Image (cartoon, rainbow, N blue to C red; front, side, top):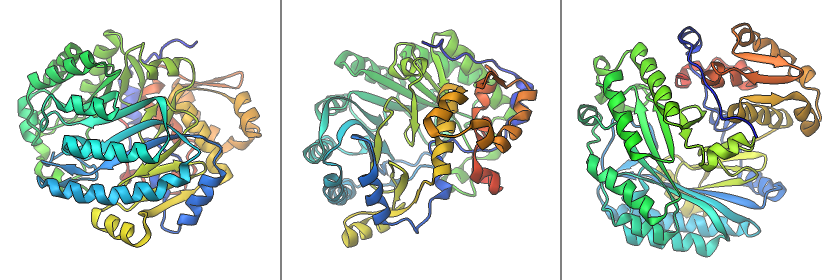
Length: 458
């Protein structure tokens, strides 16, 4: 078994390579999806898929309040009847899609948003009952849901437990009140501690906390206080995201004043101290903003060389197809990606007309599949054995990736990557720049200058 991932901070290297790039929750990335992808393409991919395990992603788009930093696909409302209407349409999609996966066993389900806990207990139980009636659920699995601690009672955990969820992810972002007010996300700190305590007492097997650095009025000093409070919470996993300020793209972000944002230097300092604080407290660095306790499944699988990555980020489910249900959700089935209609009105219209809401996608060619394997290996494990890739994919690595390896030379020169005996190893410093290194193998990125469409890597 491998040792836990070690990382090392080198300010000059991070500043040199801190440019925009994809997060590689897929390869090709969603920028390559187009509307020539058809329902028949998806049906063919399902038919040809070699998997018999399924991960379900359910998108619940509603939020009671607008968080100014948010770039997610959401609908801001306080009208619960809108969720009833959405569940009706989502139910039609579930009933239409489920028979295509009758030979699959569901081993993972995740509800994201928006705010899944915008739904009331009755709506949650109704929807989970419908899903379980239409899909074959394994006796044991990973069933998680994102929780907004502002709009719920502690009893919501009883509902989630009854519905079968065994993991929760709580959006905290920052404990500092000035920051919360600036992004329109004020929350009760004690309630978050009570929520975590109750979740652990009830036997939820994993708890995750989401934080964001780079928000208005944050400083390294204030964020250090938030980190200490997070350590008091002692979550099993942590996601610490970089805030990408793109007001031209996300209207809500225009409410955030540029002069209130921390400087790039302060953001790097926040990230640096966060890494030092969490790894010093015993958390394992998984990669790209993610940390986990050493006994967490993510950390164990990474040490065993079996970690996986998909549109939900790092995941424990390796040979598993992903079916996205609901507005804007993305599926990864065999050799294709498929995305539903992005906005709620077209989603409803498509369900009415077709019974499904497929909008666009892409079918992978042989080169895409080869590059996907390489990028996933590097982004999950920071090392690659060329001989194993040769054997798995029937290629000669050095010949196939001759041009890509030339692009990697700058990282080799800077001692961020080492190639010895046909083994690619990312150095402890290079691991913080893994997105940049993966870009060397991204043919689409190379062909099109699209850097402005991605967030910075740090």
